[in-house]
Image (tube, rainbow, N blue to C red):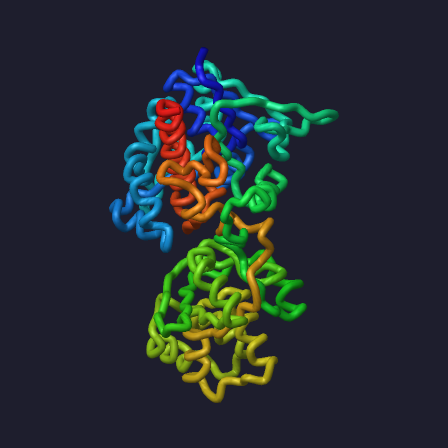
Length: 408
């Protein structure tokens, strides 16, 4: 009789672990609290499913920051090319965008998920939905169903419960206290790829919340004096700033705010021209025009950028002349007071620490139980790194299960 494997979590990590384990001849059942699988995966694909990136492998791995050394062998074992090959086996072609990001040919998550679930079910994987994992009882997994509870015995368990962002899609982080109580070393869950709060005025919120600020260069100088700078797009929200540009700085900014308090960034609102060029354009504009019209006509500033300048002036910081106005446009200061909500973040930092698992991702405190995906204490920027990390750790942990059971 084949060994029984219970996988808790039907997101991409759980599904990838199931794929590896059923291929090795195990009896695999996937449990999830939600009515259907892959809900956060589908959400990630709403704007185009970015599943990996064609960066050089060393550069790609370096993007995982402090966790790069830990994840390196896992990602090398399932890199961007391997992911594209895997998608092709599912009948899903892919393409590489101009930024190097890898997408399914139609950029949608649903066709990939459907093909994946179909193959898993055809392979014998059983799905038990509306099963909320609530712990262990008598060495068995305890699940809460709609009206009662059930115990499940398994030879090995893969926990793929995700982080704590977007809890309405299933990742609630309610495993955190459970593992702490069982002696597992876990790092606090924190928002990653998240928004940051700014004390906007009511006028800005009422008139410009939801407006893109683009193009813009964001600069952040950390506590060591190192300058971090990148161009992209920000979104002004009712509480602060969000968007891919600030997400890429989220780890550094979050930690700096936590340890040192509010942090200041600067925005180059006119990144396509130099200070000298901007000053020349402003000097050519009619002095009869209002400031907002000068900024619009001479520099083609968008309404939201003009509003930012006006708000700065209203706070009592009137530029002395056009040269100082240009400096403001090139170095517009914004104070970030705190991170946005964890539940609204794209992903989660923190989780099961590296020293809490062995080299195969089995919990030291709970033999036969493996943790994969976003439950582990790593984080990465958007751009394909999150999904690649989730898939790669899931494969690694699943192969760890096969090795452990072969020795049991």
